[in-house]
Each structure stands twice: as structure tokens, then as C-alpha cells.
Image 1: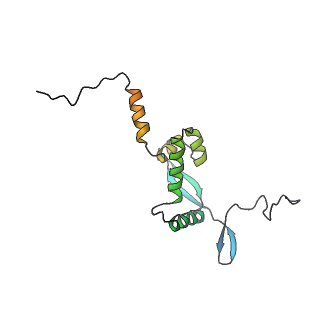
Image 2: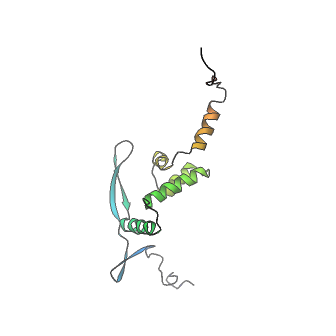
Length: 135
């Protein structure tokens, strides 16, 4: 049940979704600015939550998944959604990318889709019989 100030179960609507435990005190997770070059070489800035990334990395490591990270989870999600046929714009929106080109970098190639595209684009093409012996 909501209280008069809109709180539910002791959580206020403006309270942070994730908290970190520092010593014996709960704090908001910290956000830092990260700079990166875009495809055209322009420097872009975004906010990243390093403490949340550390929590995800620790959980993945404790689960026995070696080499995994919060970032590899984003790549897996993008590739999975692509294989299920979700629209590129939706995947881009979920990942928070400003361009479709950045999202495409996250999507792993899928051999089945590549073969289907090749068959479709080369529909009228007749290849020589490569097994025939030349004399």
C-alpha cells in the first residue's frame, strides 16, 4: 500500500533503484563520466555506474562464468534479441545507443542468417561444378 507521500514498503519514488553497502552504511551507487570515440572519431561522454558493474562482475564470477562481465551480458542480450527477430531500433533503444552502427557492433554474426542472406541475394546465380575434374 502506498503512503501519503507515495512511498511503497518504505521506498520513496525518488529513492535510488540500486544501493551499495559501504561498511555498515547503505549509499547510492556512484556514477562516473566515461569518454569514448564514436565511429567518426568524435569524443562522446556518457555516465557509467562503476560500482554496479563491479557488483555484476562479482556475481558472474561467483556463478563460475569466467570472462563474463556486465558488458558481455549486454552483447548477449543484443545478439539474442536479433536472432529472435526484434527490430534493430528496439535493441538500440534498450541498450541506450545513440546510433544503430554502435548497436550492430554488439550483435554477433550468426552463420544461419549469413547463409540465408547469401541464398536470397544469389538466387539466380549458377555456380560451376567444382567437383568436376579438369583436364
